[in-house]
Amino acid sequence: MSIDGKDCETILYSYIEVLSERVKTTPAQPDKRRHHFIPKFYLSNFINTQTNRLFVVNKFTGQVFEQTPRSTGFENDFYTVGDRGTGDFHTLLEELWEKTETDSAPIMRKLVEGIDISTHERAIFSFFVATLIARSRSSIHDSEHAAESILAERMKFVASDAERFDRIFGDIPEPPKELATSTRDFFLSGKCKHKANRNFSGPLAASLAVHIAFYLVNMNWHVGRTNMCLICSDTPAVVCSKTYNGMERFRGGIGLSDSELTLPLNTSLALLANHNKHDYSINHIIMEPSYVKKLNENTAISAENFIYASLCNEQLLSFIKKRKGIKICTQSHTIPAGNKGQYIFQTKAARREKDKL
Image (tube, rainbow, N blue to C red):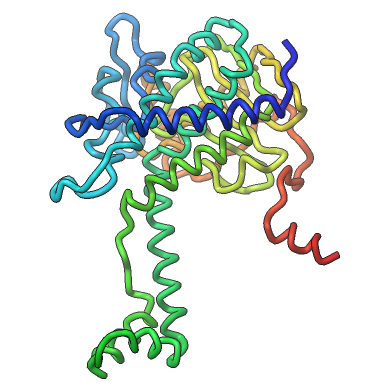
């Protein structure tokens, strides 16, 4: 099947527009408070078929317990934007994720069964995988911490110039001099912290998912198979790069030409994507044991708290324990990567420099 990159991007853009309209016109579900940051249908691919449950391992304490997918990977009101106490809130973000899951579940079944997917389905599944990165607890919390740091730095900047600070306070009728002085000192100290919330991180997660999806739809996709057992985590989609020397969930790493995305699809299959070449067909490969070990290692390292598996034994627990506290994800080199150090995108700064020439 011949697929054109521009067709993929056009379809992806159209899908996101239609999806947004569907979310806006959906009746509100204020009573739906159990928000899954890992989709139930996705977790069901990792259950023990004898018990219909999956093993959940706390990577820090080593505690192991069994749960159903419905009881796993959720937090009440995690994606609620606003304040339920005042009644001024909405759950549009949760509804966005839910509709994406509904659209993507049958596409994942096709990938698992080795059935070709259409250009439209490729675009939809790209957005779904992107949401797994953007909606994760670690990504949401990272964006909130970043917002708090940025605000503190901006307050220091405002207070660093006495005249500028006085002009701002000049809008307040006769502010007490002592208050103005103490406030400026407080701003300069860098201790002024504003607690960011879902009002900020929620919309950011949605826009981040769109940004990631436009990279992913143009990457080279593989479905890798193994006889070994793949594990999953509460942050299942991982992006690694030799150029970026660290664990990558996004932070620009997916735009590096040597980046590689991995997502376990079930206990024996994984979606693997890189920028090696622009081939829009899906390649089915057998993963080497060394690659599977590295894939499981990166999955375990990238987990924020929990690792999910269909079986649990001393070998798995030892594997997880040895990786406790490791913060580096590395590539396994089974899938050929691009040239180290090259970017497939231009930063705004690079474009500005180019315009000067």
